Amino acid sequence: MIEARGLTKRYGTTVAVDDLSFTVRPGQVTGFLGPNGSGKSTTMRMIMGLDHPSAGAVTVNGRRYGDLPRPLREVGALLEAKAIHPGRSAYNHLWCLAQTNGIPRARVDAVLDLVGLTDVARRRAGAFSLGMGQRLGMAAALLGDPGVLLFDEPINGLDPEGIRWVRNLLKGLAAEGRTVFVSSHLMSEMALTADHLVVIGRGKLIADLPVEQFIAQSSRQYVRVRSPEAARLGEMLRAAGATVADETDGALAVTGLAITDIGETAGRNNIVLHELSPQAGSLEDAFMELTNDSVEYRGDVTTDVARPIPTTVPAGSPEPGPLSDLTR
Image (cartoon, rainbow, N blue to C red; front, side, top):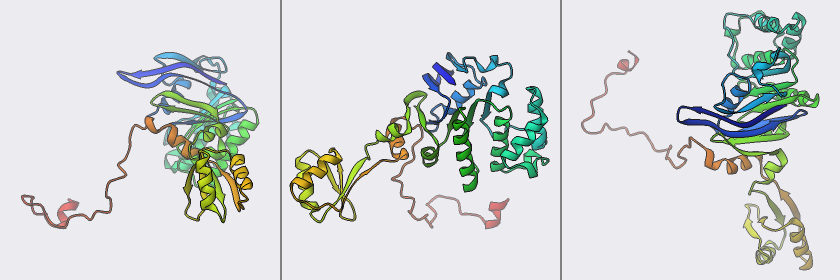
């Protein structure tokens, strides 16, 4: 179990993490979400004792990480895939880690096989692709067979097969009763993997609840209604206080009225329904709505990127030199 209480981290006048409290429990995958600059990586570094809190505390299984006698046997983490000596082979990298915590050599072979790196175990890790580096980082996290695991963006650089493998691995680890804490920017993947969410923005806690409840907060939930008398039904639903919008195929998108009330309204007025179905918002919808005020860097979607590049040189500008000048 991971417990953070009043966790705060300041860098000069910048507050990266602000009075953050949450608990990551065993037996489930807890997703750690937030916009860029929200403090996710800083929080994970404080859990692992790499950064010291300015205030508050965070413990793993009741103790600070630095107080664990054999930390690799209790906590495994992938925070930076390329945090390895580039001249060392994958096998020797893991074997060096194993010896610091009394982990047998056989475990090195086991985790290399688990992450699919057995065939390249003797190659220098510096020549690995990003995806292979991610797999090696996961092998290091799993080396001590720990009960608590942290992964920061573990699917970066992985192909679709690798992403599915990571998803199944994380869910399998949680099913074994381990504590699994994982951050990602891929909302579609978190929707498939996580059971619970901790969401932060500008260093503050925004949400700490199961995935289903988080999605249910999205205002994009609505009831889709198809009927040969859609116009008449729409007028009745508006009169009952609902908000009704027309979809492109002629169906109605109804919010503000329960699905049972919509059906009963149609029934009382002898209106035939061809479809009456709830439409849930996505994790991405709910995340964007909830963190909208916490986005630090925002692009200008109104910019006319299709505007052609001028072919004339403004008055007073120097004449361009020959093409060869550009390569000097």
